[in-house]
Amino acid sequence: MSAGPGTLYLVPNALDFGIDGADEAVPLDDVLPMGVLRIAARLDHWVAENARSTRAFLKRVERIVPLARPLQQIAIVELPRPAKGGKPSPPPDLGPLLAPLRDGVDLGLISEAGLPAVADPGAALVQAAHAEGRNVVALPGPSSLLLALAASGLNGQSFAFVGYLPVDAAARAAKLRELEALSRRSQQTQLLIETPYRNGPMLQSMLEHLQPGTQLSVSCGLTAPGAFTRTDSVARWRARPGALPTDRPAVFALLAA
Image 1 (cartoon, rainbow, N blue to C red):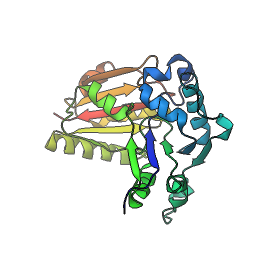
Image 2: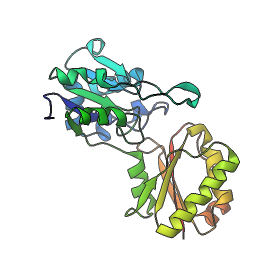
Image 3: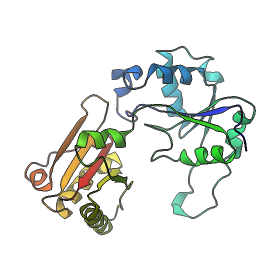
Image 4: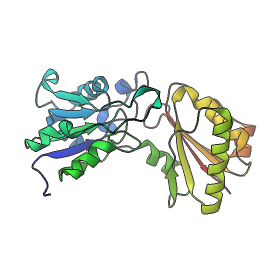
């Protein structure tokens, strides 16, 4: 199937979602290229993880580049949410969300933070667009995973993102030992994330169950005021653990010796 006339733009967002006051402290053009802001300002059809946060994003864009039409006239449709309780269900039909593309109208896809479709449910919409032969363009912007990997100093030639670990303490410990063994065999950096209010328990679990010589890196609140990255051996982390904020996203990385 040949590509249709409309383009699906994957529009990056800032990484400060949910950090109090960060959207005021960090101008959007400090973290997003001006070309991205110009494209975002002219789009009047969006598919979003969350409509409210998308409106907040567009208000930030408008401070720098005037929107092509009033915010109230911009159509924002949310991606279907997964069924509660983890019950298996057939994948939703995302075709209707691509209707603007069929009419020759460009469409924006945005996540609550970072690059759409990377550790993000928007990947399903991108797949649906490709299945219809539509134009898909990923715009440049921050990815917490890649920024954390770069700042960690760990192996950037071979790495894997493993998402969230189990909440249950025993299952989480077993998964950490499994990832450490994999990292040791392949010399591959393992990246993972956690809900901010569980940052502390995640760090504590890593310090309890990883080997002393394993390198552990934590990047917190990237691109926002007070952001930091610390990389050290587990042994040195144990000697000087420090506290992680419970209201800022963190990326954890490990590389076993």
